[in-house]
Length: 222
Image 1 (cartoon, rainbow, N blue to C red):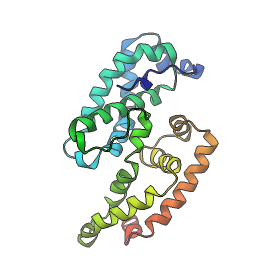
Image 2 (cartoon, rainbow, N blue to C red; image 1 turned 90 degrees about the vertical axis):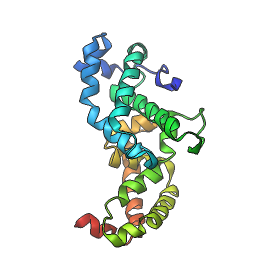
Image 3 (cartoon, rainbow, N blue to C red; image 1 turned 180 degrees about the vertical axis):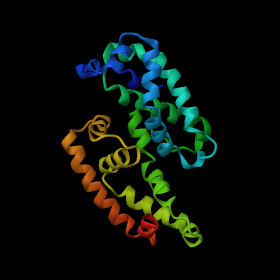
Image 4 (cartoon, rainbow, N blue to C red; image 1 turned 180 degrees about the horizontal axis):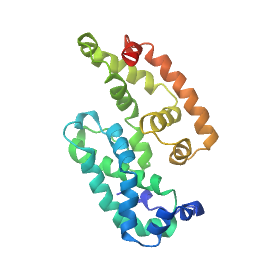
C-alpha cells in the first residue's frame, strides 16, 4: 500500500478533543471498530462513486470496506504516532488505496497507468470525469434517453475533462461524496475559503455542461 497512508505530518491537536478519536488514539481496539462504523455509510458512498464503471455488479462496496478496515487496524499505530490528518480523512485515504488495489486486481492492464509517484487522491481523481458522467446520466431512464446515453456520456465526460482539475475534484468531493467544505479542503490541501469558492464556481460550470444534455433537467424535476 502507498506509503503516503502512514506519512508523518503536522500533528492536529483538535483530533484528541473528539472523545471517540481520543479513545482510538489511546489504543482502545473497540474504538476503531466504532469509529469505522460511524463513518461506514460515508465511506461506502465514496466507494460507490469512485468505483470504475466496468466493475459495477462485480465488486461490492462492502468488500472494499472490509479489506480497508483490516488495513486500518494494521496501520492504526502509525496514525496514533503522527496524526497527520483528521480521522475520517485518514480512513478515506486507506479506503481509496484499497479501491485502487481492487481496480488493479480486477482490471489490471486495462487501467490507465497513473504512476506510483502520484498521491492516492490523484489516482482516484484520474477517473472522476467518467464516474461523474456515469452518475449524472444514470437518471436518464426513458427509452430514447437510454439509447443516447453512450453518446451523451462521451459529451459530458469530455466537457468535465475541460474543467479545472481542482474545481472538478471539489465538486466531486462536495456533491457526490458529500464531504464537508473543511474535509474537502483537507483532502485537496487547499484553504477552506478557496474550497468554498471553487465549489460555487464548479457548480455553475456543471450546470452549463448539463444544459447541453437533452432532457437532463426534465428528468431531474420529474
